Image (tube, rainbow, N blue to C red; front, side, top):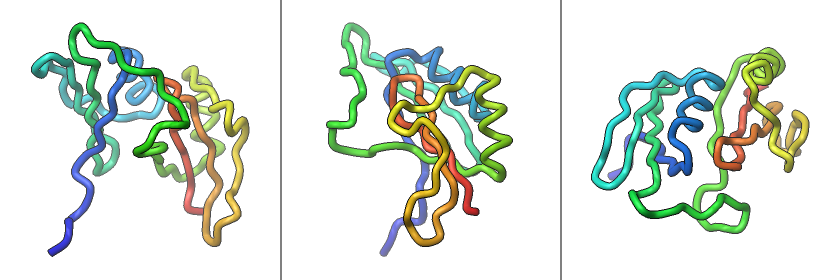
Length: 132
């Protein structure tokens, strides 16, 4: 018995409007739905064959600020055909590079392509990479 694949990735956000703007207007995801859910608001987005589920904080609760010193997933990575073309486009849309990686680079891993980290809507690292 084994898993069949990744169904979706859930991301909590301090600002639903800002996150939806980032993932749709800047990265090109498709907004599928946005609805109340229990004490939260949630939105479903589609990126290729992967779904993203955005969650707001619960009513009357505040999320901690994202930082590099928490356990769990470190970043989310998106694949693009041409990093330079994509990067020029997202910068025109207002995206900025994450301060931890202020320029594109190729990690010293066999077969790794060029990558860059964008500053996500809550300060998180959003990796954009190619296979080349």
